[in-house]
Length: 536
Image (cartoon, rainbow, N blue to C red; front, side, top):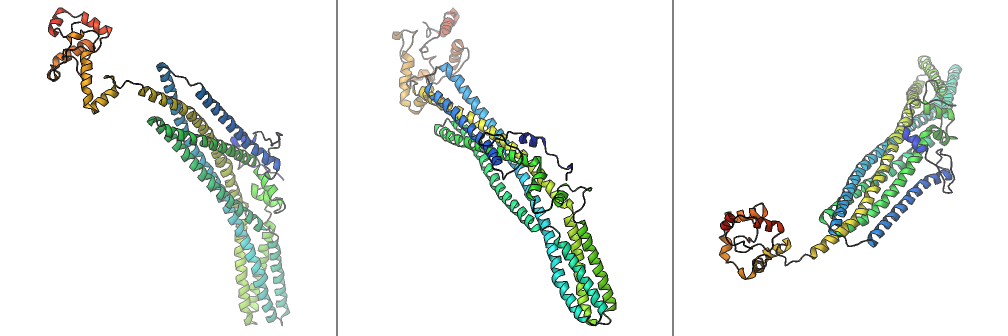
């Protein structure tokens, strides 16, 4: 029995994943049919996880080789070689941050899509379970009413109508109709087993999905926190923070590879199911429900006969016949046997409730309800679920790239920070033109006297015998315009200094060739204007 399905078409990524090589742990190719109970098929999914584990090993090995080369080949770099390394560290950190942010965004979307697909699956399973439970409840209630309630009423009426053989014959005929109804109800499939299986599958799936969603949420938050902390460590040049983030980066790298293997294996297995879901369902229900009933619910085509139509028709005809017999007894027997009215009305109410149950049972057994739940479950798993798993695989790949870049940039940043601290410690603190020395001089005013004497008596152009310490008031009373003109002459741009040398009768500590050429090119008018303070 076959039918062409038009209401469900697997998306392209299902066939792409389905065509992945299926190899067992003995490296032997196997069939890609979804058979989760087969040991070789289970090994083919485990093999995909082993591929991710091998990728993790290669990744860690490459990082170890890189770090070893970085430690062994470290040399004292010149000033010109430091700037490119610093730029490389900066761009590596920027790339790692951008890739990590993109990975987190993709991960949140994929986690949400997968959760939506699994929620749609569990909702459909619970809905189908409710439908099957309703069918079972109606069948059980109708059979109970026919077996116990109807038999009690017929037994009492048999005693009342003992003197009338025609009425007793009518009661026997009604008993035959009741047995016929019970027989048709017993011919329906036992839905208890299927109902229990669907409920168990839905509960287990919901629990697993909750912990999966929570785990990925924590992993995404961890990735984001590590990325932000690493950027903070680079900005503050904190070596202990960078070291901590490097350790967590290695841990997250391992988790990313593990999640990639788990997601890939799950996506491939789910795709194998989504390629031929009807075949798997029919194999699972074999021996429990007849194939024509399963086929009726899976395809729900108008061309397919309803396997319950005959039973429901016999049920309806039997109830109608019994209703006619009860109406006749109420009309003709009650005037003769008034005590029989109570039992006859009881049978009539029982038949009315059975007819209402028949209508509900007909609606529940119709294929459209269960087929809709089946298609909703397929769409949730094969569209949203597998698509979300692919996005989670992409998240894992981006996270791996981001943390590899971060783990490569942090040792470089460590070296750069160490070299800067070493160069900073090598600066002469007694140099008056060192910003660090100026800060020290500002904090300790006693050091300013040494600076004045150094600026006044250390010159490469002036005669040391002609230089003398200026008076304190000479510094404060120097004309501002004269200082500005002299600054414009030697520097091109007028500026103030913390310790002005011009106007104190002392030249700067040293002259550059350009400044000396400027001085030699001065006109006599300029020399007379400035006086003998700057004569060489």
